[in-house]
Image (cartoon, rainbow, N blue to C red; front, side, top):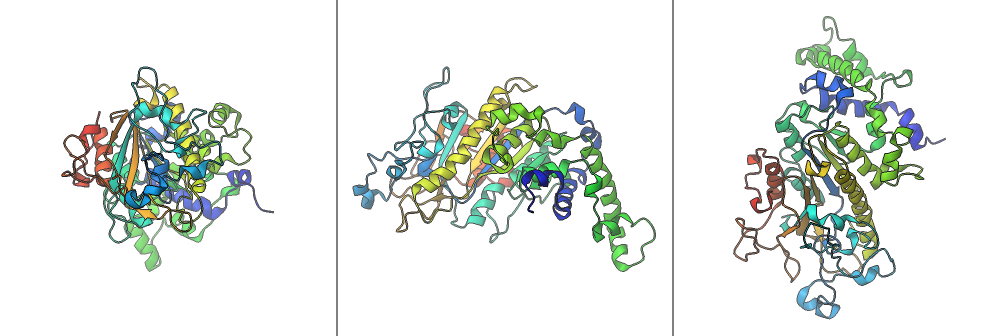
Length: 473
C-alpha cells in the first residue's frame, strides 16, 4: 500500500533521508558557524534582517499581475497597432477574477496607491496582495535578454547571465548569508529553488528541500527506524585507522572521513532540539499556524502554496533561518489553453504570498516594529509571456519582465520602469532618477539583485552594476 504524506513524515525512505541529511550537513555544519549558536536552540532569536525570494515557475503573464493594461483602451480592434491583448474577458466565467485592472483600496495613513494590478493578484471581494501596496515597489520593463527558462531563472537567482545554461556565481541568498554570517541554525533554506555557492564556506549553502516533508525529516531526531546503512556511510564512519585501499587513502588525505563524522555528530545534536516540530503543522502547538494559513481541513497541506508560505513564516519568526527561497507557484508555461489557467495558477501563489505578508506584518519583531519592517521580499519569474495570444489560446515567451520588491530597505508605494504600449517591449529609464527616458538604459536582473544587497548595506560589487538607488529607502 502506498504511504501517505503522514507516513512519509514518520518513516522516510532511507535514500531521501540520506539526500536531505547530506544537504543539511553541507549547508550548516561544514562551513564553520559556531556550533554553540546552533545547539542553544532554546534561545533562538530571529535575524535582524530577513530575506524571502519567491519564485513563480514557468514565466508569468504580467498583464495578469504587475503590468496590466486597460482593456477599454487596448481593444481587439487595435491589436494590429498595439500588439497587446489583455484577454481579461476570458476570465468572466470565474467570479473570483476581475475583468479590469485592480486598483488597491487606500490604506489609512499610507497615501493613495500609485499602482494597478492585473486580475490574478487577488479577489477584490476579500483581502488580497494588493492591500499591501504601501510596502511595495513594482519594477516593470525588465529586460531579461533571454527566452530560455533555465537561463532566465538562473539569471534572476544570481544577477549574472549564465554561461550557456549553467549558473554563474552565487545565489543572492548565498551572497547574503556569506556576508552577514547570521547566528541561526539553518541560515538559508531553498524549497524547490536552485542554489549556488562559488565563493563562501559551507555555512552559506542553502539547505535544499523539495517540500515541507523533506524539511521535517531532515530535522527529525534519529530513531531506530532511520539508521543509515549505506555502504558509503559505513566506509566513512569506519575510516579511523590506517588506510588500506587507495580509495580510503584518498578519503583520509582530504579529511572527508573526519569531517563527515564530526558533522554527523553535530547534525544529531541539532536534531535533538526538535526543530522539526516547528514545521509539523498537524501538532496542536501549531493550531494558530493552521488557522492563519487556512490549513485546517486539508488532508495533505504540506505541499500546498499556503503550506509553503507557512513554512517561510515559521522559519523566519522562530529564528531558524535568515533567508528562505521558495517556489510558490507553477504551471505558468501556458503556450496552450486559456487565460483562466494562467490566472488560476498565479492566484494560488499570490493568495499564499498575501497570507505570508499579512502574518509577518501582524507579528512583532524582537528588534522593534513588525517582521515586515525587518524582511525584504523579492517576487520574480524567469521572463514574462507575450502580450498577444497565440493560435492555440496561450501566450509564448517574452523578453520584458516585471518583479515585486517588498518590505525593509526599499521605498514603498512606488512603480518604476515601464514596458512599451506597442508590444510591451522593455522601456528605458534614467538610472539617476528612475524617470522613464527614451535615452536612458534598460533595467536588467543584475540591477534588481544589486538593489536587494544594497537594501541591507551589503557589498553588491559582484553584480558589476549600481543598484536602483531611487528605490532604496
